[in-house]
Length: 455
Ligand code: GDP
Image 1 (tube, helix red, strand yellow):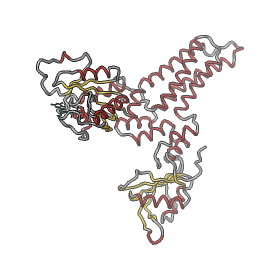
Image 2 (tube, rainbow, N blue to C red):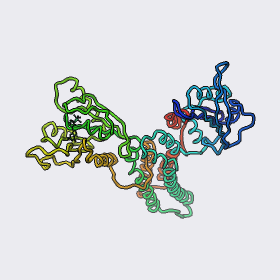
Image 3 (cartoon, rainbow, N blue to C red):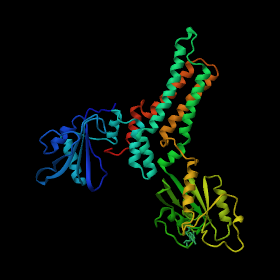
Image 4 (tube, rainbow, N blue to C red):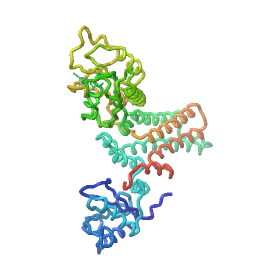
């Protein structure tokens, strides 16, 4: 079991230098520890910024830094316990010295995520919200941040609680029927209960149907650009990244290695993989690049297969199209700013949906970005559902759904109430695990160990 009886301290701002650095102290002794560090004579007033000086370093090398202390009395604080935040100059030496002094004054160094864990243990946040704190901190794209904010606000929690309430309602009625059978009084008919469970399943399905997109938002995806040499892969890579990381060159086969770059594209965090030209070659270094290209594209969530519109489609292009036929892919025809080769026409192209782009003029790039988002999320409907971004939540909801389905079948098949009740209890348990009403120490350890120290 986790202890909340001691007082913890950590630097809350990121490592490095900045205008300000903040140290957070939380626990029953927070105010006492803070006062011991400073020249404060009087007890701290809650929620008032108090100017003070702290001693930094020991002996003759010691200095004094000006700080501002803010005291939040529990339970009205982030962790739900007494918290003091010390704003000092954002220098690692200063901040570490203050932390050391706090430890000498009786605080303990906080573990990863321990402030948020305490917030969870004191019921300031449920588990979904706690996970959202980390997602928010880790968010790279505005969309990731928005989804994390949504979960922090409790939209997903609310939805899951309301689904759970519906399960509870069916359970209560079934139990009542079970408790008073001799009265021949059925609080709920089997068909009616099966119907209600059907409704719950539908609500879970609605949430799950957006899980693919939700996970994509949270975790990002890998996109590989494939094509024979010189079709314009590096140029597209750059156009998408808006940066000049890959060397763009007119000589075939110069992108010998695989470049990966993470970027916010259309609100999604995508790792773009620019691969060496896929073609048969005898050059060993290039051969190595091609092997890597094949393996990189094998793990990619989506591949962009690129053809060059300014020359006829050749055997290597066709081989690539065949090779990627079973993949989630987007076929793009690049260099659409150039004229078609003599005698060629767009009709001669293979029968796949093709996007026309020009990596150099930027034509069609927006449409390509949109297509990537669509292909990856497997759905293009506008959404008013809370996003399910977290695999843990998805797995538990799927488990709840299975139990509910079993219960529904038992009821429809006329099985006595005890059995569907067990399944409903299982479903409810899975829902409680999502929100953290039911957890284990291992699970908490697992979740909070992914946080940074000071969060
Ligand atoms: P890669 O080998 O597939 O990575 O191809 P690069 O990106 O190095 O491009 C090969 C050549 O085609 C370079 O000279 C690029 O400037 C040129 N190129 C790439 N995209 C376009 C395009 O859309 N239009 C035109 N006109 N040239 C392009």
